[in-house]
Image (tube, rainbow over all chains, first blue to last red; front, side, top):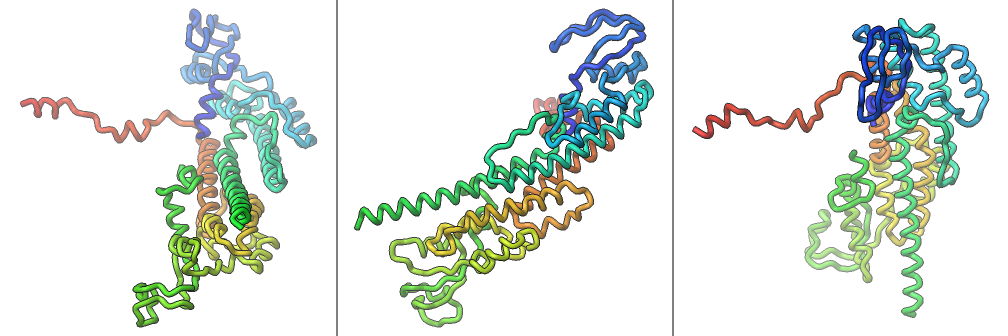
Length: 192
Length: 204
């Protein structure tokens, strides 16, 4: 998958905005949004929020977790923990990327949030790499990784599945030739 | 993706065809009438027993695997015991493509022969692949890696490396610039629309 496609999925996430216009409810296939009342916060999907922001029709209030202190705590926890910790959102990376890209003037401490999120991303990525390596080196047949987010999974996607497929192939052929040998031997035995 | 087609070697898999094209040194065991031309150094009409030939795998295999083998084969030295020790010591230090571009594919084919060194071959290939994967992954995910490094990898690792690298480039691009506008798919862009004007001309 393309990062753009992951971002597209992330755009469905809801975000609070403060509109500066009045409008009735909008009925969409995925659900109804609104009504919009000027000055009253309302939750809408990110794609619409960015669109409205570009037309200067709203102010984006960021997600609750987009707070420098909270993110620093998450980062510390991530550092301490051996396994992956739960992220505030399944699309944290893309949400930060989209919202801060479109509305860095609305969200306080945008730059610090960006740095903190990038740090968290880097820690998790290196953790993922070491765990993939450990998994491949061990003879394990399955691994369980909780709390990985969409963009992180996408990051290892063509590499890891392809490698695992090839490993299965090497293994299967090895086993097949071993069983074929034993079968031939048993046939030889019976012919004797 | 090209990797998918080479998962299970089939009749149309180019990688597989090229892998079976690799040569093995064989020794003829029986007299083969009228095939003397295969040995360029001899003048005789027939292929004599004891002649040493370099044959492609697909030919060598069928000559060796019959009930009454026509030729005996010698497996390449890089699948043998002494090289196995090199691989066990540190598989990452070796430029595998210099040994054979189709190291894994060819190895799986060679493993089909009845040869004492062949029994442990699939196991060795798997172990080598596992220990080298970290290297391939690090190269693929590190942006500063010289793309020319791909030529040092055997084909199987090369395709994995290139696909991993492509996705990494996409991710870096997304970080920098973000998902831009939606593009027309190639299918639609290449699809030639029938123009109204040509229609009218044809009708006249």
